[in-house]
Image 1 (tube, rainbow, N blue to C red):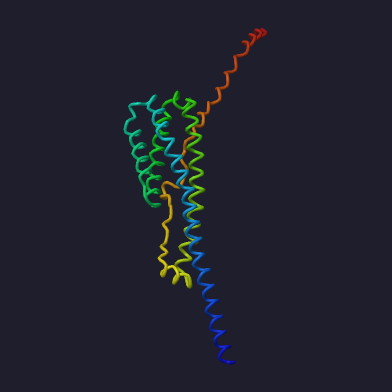
Image 2: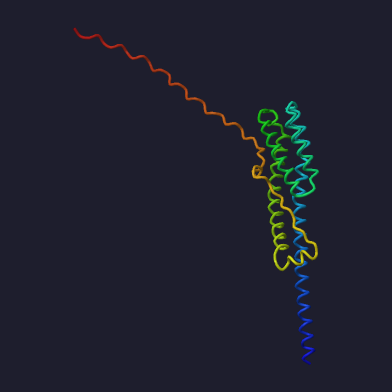
Length: 213
């Protein structure tokens, strides 16, 4: 009888241990899937941003075709973003594109007709909206990466991660100089108030009466 109890206890420990191990494994799988899902959100916004660039370049070229270097820098940064294969590569290319766009919009300041172009204004609005969505998606992705990387580096899940080949994911980081959003809005230049009109001179003073003898 005592032998049966021992067997049952051992079997119970094995079953409970198996359930715990399965739970930890499933948790790692779910964490990895959450990271991939979060990355898809960044990828969608990066592709949307990239799709706006050709139209933007052509619009600017119509008003400032001689700004060839600036336009080529934007096109080159876009190509690097499209060819990025990892999160760090995509982050670096996105930062380069951000810097190139800043230069492009700085150049556009010198062209009032371009700044008033409706297509340019719409692209400006869409780029600003996309940049905000990228920033939000980056934060969401990095939170999931942090949670997942922590789980595969801490006991006891570290043993499961090592046994089943779970690898840490890389963060999508913006450079310190690129953390500010792209400035693509053009506030109208304030018109200085008109100078106050000069006060017209009053009528001449009447002549003084002659002195009494």
